Image (cartoon, rainbow, N blue to C red; front, side, top):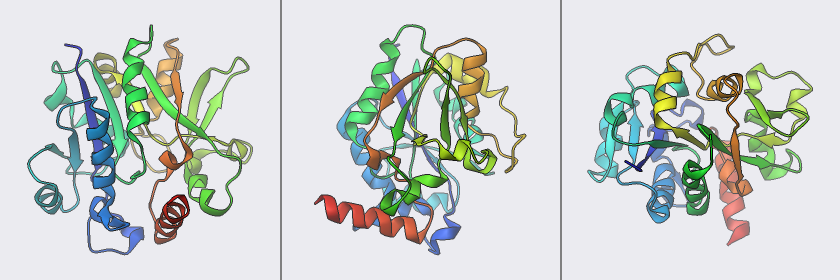
Length: 251
């Protein structure tokens, strides 16, 4: 096959944004969050039509974005692992690798997506991810404080991602964070999603639990460095303002 699929998780409600619009359609610099990301996916050329997981106001999202994309509906929001799992029927047997992206990470660039896709050529890699190391969590980087922390062993190998809600005080000091940009071997992904459990503070199925599962199976976790703006996850009005400030400073 040799084909790669890009899944974009876009089912969120965005309650904390205080907007009547579904989260993917909230605008950043005059353009919906998800359109920024879709433009980067198109520029990367790594896949055909991305698969967009919709939920809240699904019809409005599909109507706004149009028919150039494939859509899968997540009728219950049970976490990121569940959101990817609902894509299994649409993709299993049709692609050999899967990249997972988030609609509310609008500043992911095409180069990062291309780097993730290239991990399929890395020997013995069933799971790869982008990571970002921040100097601190001050100013516009404060948005990254809510991100999961990357844990590594003494040899520098990734062993786990701990979500902020579940992290200890010591783990929260880790400055290498997870921007939620993943590569998976497709067959491995579908098989192992079945083993992900929801025993955590949120009662959700975390896609990030697959990192620990891969480590337990003695699979090396491949990582690629991403630019810091790729970590912008926009969940609040304050984070939106931070992203807008960053874009203004960059221009």
